[in-house]
Amino acid sequence: MKRYLLLIISCGVASMMAAQSAYQTYLEHGYDSVRTSILTQMYENERNKPNEAKQKKIAKNIQKTYLAERNDMQEIVLESDNELITIAHNLQTVVKNKDYSSIWGCLQANDTVTDIRKRENAELLVMEHLYKVSDDISVEYIKLSDDSVSIYLFDHIFFEKSISGAWKACMLQILYNYLPKYWHANYNLKTYIYTADDLTDYIANIRYGKPELQVEQYDVRPRVYANNNRYYIELCYFNDWTGLVRSIYRVDINNEGEANIDLVSDVVLHEYRCGVIF
Image 1 (tube, one colour):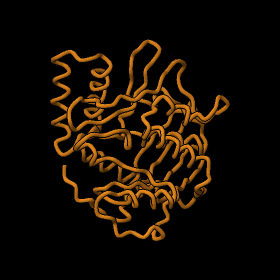
Image 2 (cartoon, rainbow, N blue to C red):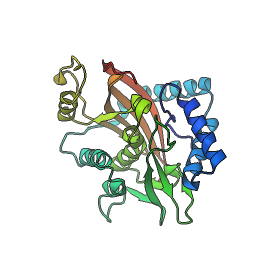
Image 3 (cartoon, rainbow, N blue to C red):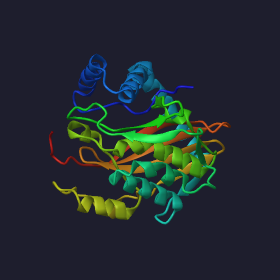
Image 4 (tube, one colour):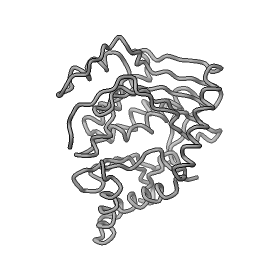
């Protein structure tokens, strides 16, 4: 079943205009079939999304459900030595090193892991410079045994109904936020903060105006709330044009291992703007 994706395809201020222009160029000039197929699916995904009013209604209902359910769910705070944090850090490292062939290995860890699996002969791949324009993005996609491709990762990757399964589904969902971006697309770049040390290191390496932020003010440890086949996952990220933000995701996993993820909310904990304008 095709589920419209959470990600909004964005290349900056004039994102959709630039993307549409690039897409039209590909159609007119017959660029490679993989890139054209990915672009076609992305635009179909955008067209199939509910309209803005309906999206706001859906979001409001999701937030209402979250507030009603969370207090009755088991809360798990992930400390820095938790193996799930290790998985998250490893994913950040392989993306930073552009070692995309290791992404699946980070998620699966070893052949005995049962909390994540993919269709036989399916490959999880990354395409950089999707549009081949200056303000550009990268995307994950699935290559199937017949050489067809799909951007709908969760139609081909399945998860165990467990905290680790939900965590890995969430990690896969947010991966696009820190895949390589170029020029205007960097406005949307997110660096996920899983520990106090992560936040300290990130602030220390900001090249422009340092945020007036005391690390000890904020508890950035991820939290997982679990109950049967539903999970809420709280994560923090830093964006140089927004600041420190806490995101909450709802992860539902059915008996077949199909995951559905919704963004519950984004709450700015500390506002910051680096001052850079592309």
